[in-house]
Length: 350
Figure 1 (tube, rainbow, N blue to C red):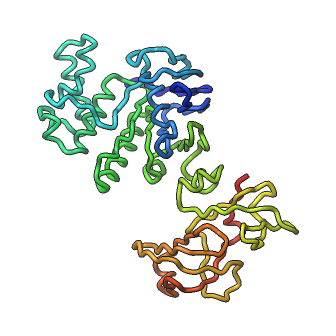
Figure 2 (cartoon, rainbow, N blue to C red):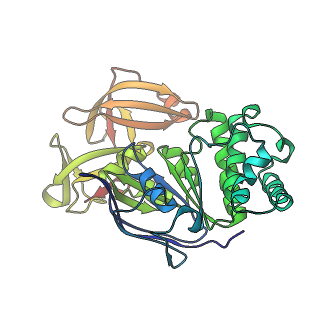
Figure 3 (cartoon, rainbow, N blue to C red):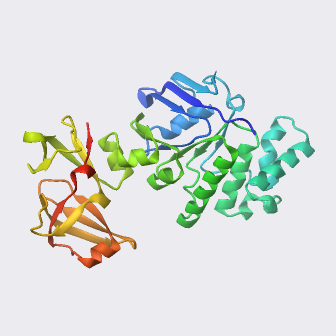
């Protein structure tokens, strides 16, 4: 297996005519990192992945892999391997021959390429299915074969384009565990495109949140979740209430409806605050909390209960309450409640 290598994108840009799909992004992915490119459809994440792979030509900027500028190299000479969303397995070839195919194209002898393919299938625990055709495999099994085919070229980086999107929810969770374990065992970098926040948070050493062709934030999953850099990140990651604010007197901040809050945790230049839904405080009406709200909805989720809340003059809010705490003092739709949060749980966004 090739050694892991650092990836660096320098002012990388991709234009299609007058449309800019990727807008001058710069990013460093340390060697051996599991990195997820996360964002909504059309944000530029797949285009970025395809430029790293060499399947799209960069309009401007550079792609550096292990100190070598690979921007203009053909895909086969980059030291990367791409696993496509559709898996792209040849339907008429066995699993073994699918995995060995790239070695066959490189002129590797039959015995050697079959031995290496068999070893790769063993690594992904698919050796028992070596002679089966792709149509005889489940979606998860096909994914493992596609991954083995990507790994057989000894890449420094594996590129994955939404590899879990075709799987059912139970298998998706299991396969993301297996992907992370395999990446850690191999010690090479994986760059994984997804639009699933849960997937990115579960897998990533580095989460890169993209929007409109630009990087909004690149950090650990915990940093992104607890300290979103922008209002877009807070909203897209989910689990946050995002509120517009303005400076008030005596260090307070003013919400859009005029309510004043203790400004601790929100810098003077903050234009928004983010408060995690699980940090919201919901009490009976009349409690000493700054806002009055009406319960819009109650959803039982097992370990937690999601409560939708309406506050006059503000966007809809949500609170996530522990099951035991909710049922100790339950609320119902239409009920008036007091609402707030601790000052230290308020994160200011400039």
